[in-house]
Length: 48
View 1 (cartoon, helix red, strand yellow):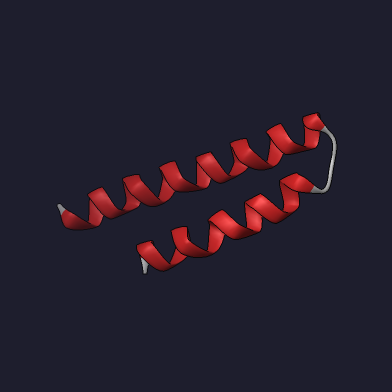
View 2: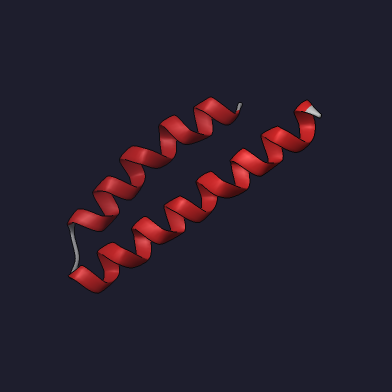
């Protein structure tokens, strides 16, 4: 599940960030990075 989330987030963030200004690009990239961090910490918590 965690790999699938990451595989879906990368193209979505890429598409959203390419269609706006530099400020919106930074916003989408940082939100994607926060999501990746959250998924990573969740995976570590589940693993144990």
